[in-house]
Length: 93
Image (cartoon, rainbow, N blue to C red; front, side):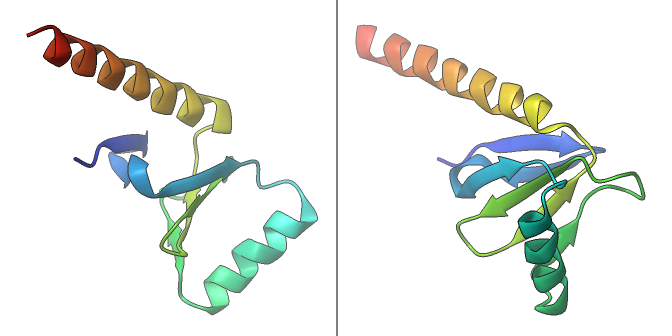
């Protein structure tokens, strides 16, 4: 069952498809974002704000977010903890 992670401003990504969440500052990341733009595989979810995180998916999409990578990571980890609790509760029944 797929879970969605909020990446800001009402935008979400499928947590099962996320491969990496990185800062956009490094030159290789900037080149990858530019290539995704040229290949039409870039999704800009910043709503006009400054890009603070770049999300890579297993589908080959590159998603830009205005949230910090740490914020997205915390949301991702909080969801994983919630799933673990739900699985533990199901095993107890």
